[in-house]
Image (cartoon, rainbow, N blue to C red; front, side, top):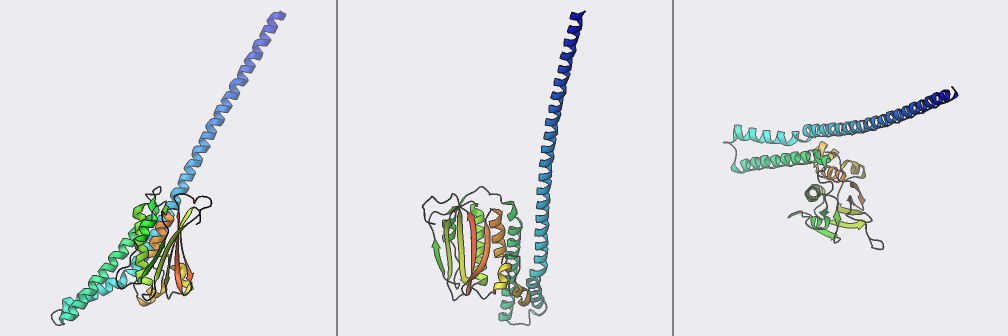
Length: 282
């Protein structure tokens, strides 16, 4: 009897141990499942936050574009309509010289609308940054900076072998936008200085030029149609620096403006291809 009781006790203990093992294994399996669920939940939550951020950004861009259309398109459209109406109603009674002036004005205002629309679309699409992992030759792109005839002379001080994490098309668009800004904003009797150098892990581009803008306007330069002067006088505004900021920030860079003596200095920072070697002057 003692042997039977001992055997039964051993079997009972073994079954108890097996049950405990099964329970522990089941609990661990459940915990792992719970951890996976939590991980998936966090991933979904992060994805939702990212989607909301993108929606907010898209909404802000849409609002900027709507405000830009209502504000900046009104003046050239009014001028085009007025000139066309004059030619339609009195074209046979005005001089050939006056007709040429009206037609030239229509073409110029149409070109202005085309440039504004192109810049708006470019700024709106900048957030996608399709070439985020691309590398471009900054030295070559900046040495191609041109303003054209009857514009301020340009002095270049571009270091050799500068490369940054930005795709070539975007960099060319940045250079073009900088040139558009200078044509619209810089005094023509003073030289424009464009410099670029490496500083640690960054490529720093600086554009200095003479301007009559007040210090209070600096924060508005990188906003769409931020100039109060343009709103008050009808002077053609430009989206150029807004485009620059959008493109540069989309590739992990920065853009800012500050005073430079009696002029302005636009500063752009891009991520360099590789940090400068230890002991290398920057």
